[in-house]
Length: 122
Image 1 (spheres, one colour):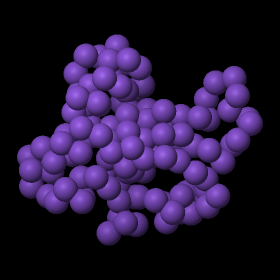
Image 2 (image 1 turned 90 degrees about the vertical axis):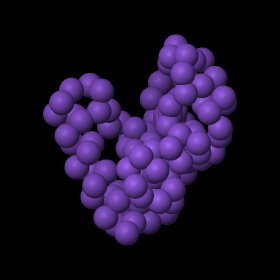
Image 3 (image 1 turned 45 degrees about the vertical axis):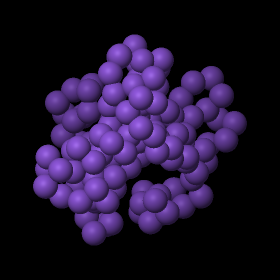
């Protein structure tokens, strides 16, 4: 992650990563998004809201479901390591304000940035 943060011009930024199972991920998704099912990755930004200016170097939290990553890796025929990197990049971009659900244009912009960052990791 340090390499990605440096590439993005955020060498002093901090974030947390929590690896969980499907039950915990379903609980997070239900509690914070009102969606009662598991998902692969969730991001909780600290750069939004009333107190975002207090610690601007703190990006937020990424929660990643390892079982979901394992299923997706198998389906895509690549390694679990690659899938976890892909999900961490995706979560990081959400922390930075990217949102693929806003519009097609935003989805394209986010996908392009994901590809760029994944190439840096490979």
